[in-house]
Image (cartoon, rainbow, N blue to C red; front, side, top):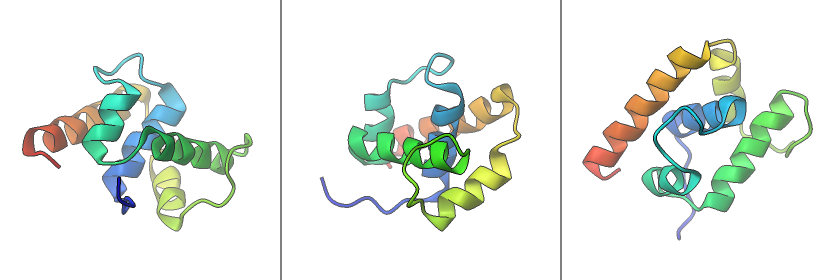
Length: 97
């Protein structure tokens, strides 16, 4: 798989996964990585970046985009962020990325 160029919507989805996991969305990690066009390893590493931004360990060499998304969305309630994420994923899935 070629190198993925991260976009804002990718990081919004990944922040949701970091904060809330996959229990309340109708997608698996594999589904999400396929829809976003990246490997599951890349997705898991980006999740670890959000862990670092939250000062809970993780991978500390995070992108400025991740920091921007973290600061913008970290206080969103789970239900509101979930709706955004489901909209992003269903839109990308329906148009084939």
